[in-house]
Structure formats: C-alpha cells, structure tokens
Image (cartoon, one colour):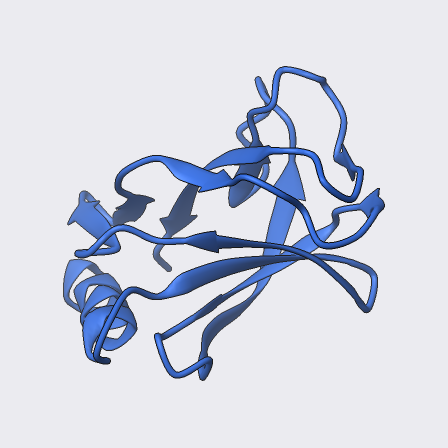
Length: 119
C-alpha cells in the first residue's frame, strides 16, 4: 500500500512544478490549492499532504463536496475525494477555515488538510 501511495505522490510531483488540490461543489469548480513539493508523505498506508493547504481567494461559491488532485499540467491524478469539516475523520479532505461548514464563498480564503487512506 505504501508503495502505491508513494507512486501517487511521485506522479503528482513529476511535472515541472507543484500539483494542485481542486475543490468542487457538485460540478462547479470552487477553489484551487497549490500543493507542496513533495506533495505528501506516506506512512502506514496513509498519504498525508504536506505544507499549508491554502487558497487566498476562492473562485466561486458553493458547498464543497468533492475534490481532485492534479499534477502541474492539470492532469487529474486522483479523483473522487470526499470533503468535510473537522473533527470528522470520515473524509479525505477537511476544510479547516474554522467555520464548521463546507460552504465556500467566492473571494474567501480556503484552508484545508488532507489524507488518503490506502486500500
């Protein structure tokens, strides 16, 4: 499992620059967060995204319910990620704005954390 998750990190980081976490409300694109490089750390069957996951200005308004990870060329590497708010551990991506909701408003700062459980 660790090897497969590391391959995901390596694929995200293979391009010329950083990959991205993209947040969606249904089919509406809401926010892009630039990932660190390397994008994450793998340990014990879990990929944890590194660095500060922050978008200073959301592109649209909506209740975020899914996310994708792309490489620097905007090629989707991971899709179908679930989005929630802390303290839940049921979701891949947690919006950590301190607002207790997945509602994002255009122009607001979006903060997140994330882990992908291997299977």
